Image: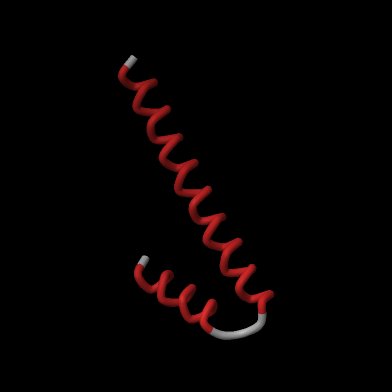
Length: 50
């Protein structure tokens, strides 16, 4: 995870504006995927708990 943040920091520090937006979109997609994974985990836990 730390490597991912280091890569994002490197991308944001350099390059044109387009690369910055791409890095932001990657970060948002990562957050969305994490949220979905947590939601699925909670749903499975509730189903198993009854």
